[in-house]
Length: 107
Image 1 (tube, rainbow, N blue to C red):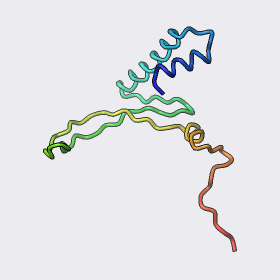
Image 2 (cartoon, rainbow, N blue to C red; image 1 turned 180 degrees about the vertical axis):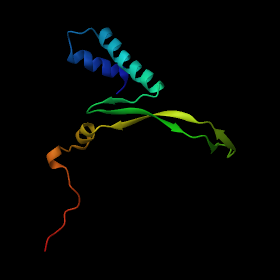
Image 3 (cartoon, rainbow, N blue to C red; image 1 turned 120 degrees about the vertical axis):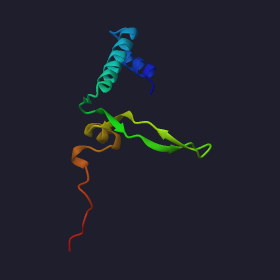
Image 4 (spheres, helix red, strand yellow; image 1 turned 90 degrees about the vertical axis):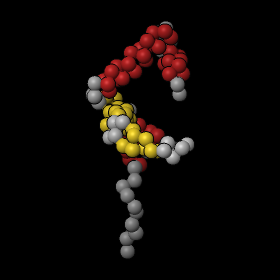
């Protein structure tokens, strides 16, 4: 799903809101998440997941086309970790039906 599809779905589910207002709301949320990550903050949306920033050290890489070694600078990358509820919904698990490990036969 792309941002425009998200805006359309939200606008369809909320007919009392104009599509341009929904677009402004979605943009405001995404912009605030981006600003928080740029500050080095962690953004947690309960039941959905958490966005954070991870530091990657400088390293020596390789150009796949020429095989030449190149230096890759240190950089910060965004990381997303799904929340427990999201994982359960994606995997079709409910809290009661979760497996507690391998089943062992008793003699």
